[in-house]
Length: 114
Length: 115
Image (tube, rainbow over all chains, first blue to last red; front, side, top):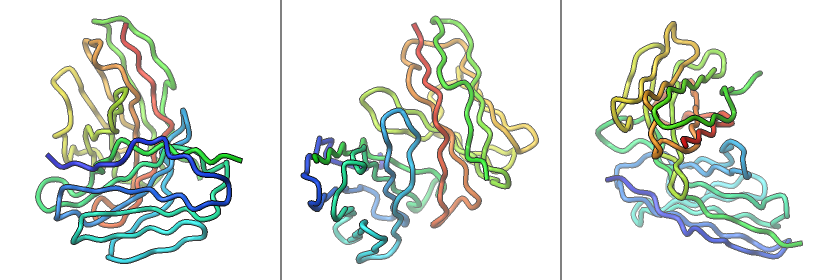
């Protein structure tokens, strides 16, 4: 069974701090990795994708991937109260089976305190 | 450009009744996915259409669930008869390309409550 694990939180950080969200996955053949943000009662919204080992930066967000350790993380710099949401880690594209569907973790709830 | 839309937003039905959920993908997206989130669990894949064909339906829980995508445009997901454990939020997503780095865009979901 392919799994994606995340700490459920809540993770609480003060405004302006760095929030660090972590995710591990079980399928070593996974090829694509995504971070979605979901506000309560809303649809998941893609904020970052990463496909190669290393860091990928986009504004205040940095995704980090380590395929050897089967680990992906998301750093949010200068956290704002509007970043308060549930962050979902999703993985796609293991060898064999469908390469289209996403496998999600349960999500980490982030709370940024003013 | 309109996003993925789903109808209805909420549905409350009794055990044994039938419910049909609808998803309209982003125009031009050949790939359409159904996912479900049961309370306390992660979002789980149900099935994947490429145009009107079912590419992968390995996540469908049982034969009470029937998905269609006639004409390769909108899709429906019918649950018949509904059971208590079918309660949850049903998401639809669409993308242009199935494999690799293609982004899946999610709809707002349909919250289904079976009493």
